Amino acid sequence: MKSLIVAVDSVDVFKALGDEEPLVPEEVLLRYKTAEDDSRLSDLRLEKEKLLRKLEIVRLRQTFLHLAVEKAKQLNLDLKNLVPQQLTVGKNKPKIKAKEICGFNEILSLDDAALLDWSTTEAGKRIFAEKKIEGDHECGVEKRKCRHVGWQGLRGEDILMEESLLNSQLEGISRQENVIKYVPTMMKLMMFLESGRKYVLGVGIQVMGVSFR
Image (cartoon, one colour):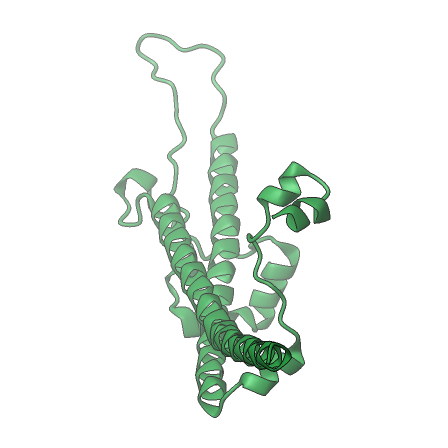
């Protein structure tokens, strides 16, 4: 304990001891690694690659959703500006209000494979590069009467939920990788050190026995 206290610079550093896994030299890991470890790590790497590809698609959806929401806002603002402004409003002359349209973009309905393919087209690459949706692919039905009602919030919640799930799965894989890499190695090292300690102790006892004869 005294050695630890002397070695650290501050109380905060002392409190943080043990928060990070100790670094084990690569040559030590290779010495104790088995063929079964390699196979399990290979499977985990493949699983991680699949999850990362899914996460990439989720982030494409997230970006496009943001652009689609902004486009819908702009369309409704443009419609509002087209409505003639009234100087006075009489009792029998109701104020004209612009009807808001839905603004849902059909690209949001694509499945993962179709969205990934579309993102590599000229139109898709241009939209993601310019961060702006051009063209006329939005639903023009009145917002309160459309079947897409609430699409902004619903799609956003789905994306956040999927992103959280994928990140959780990736963290789980990282933990499994660390267990495979470090736990067996540390156990074997501890067994090796323990056997060495017993050997040294045994030699010491023998030496002491000889010296006392």
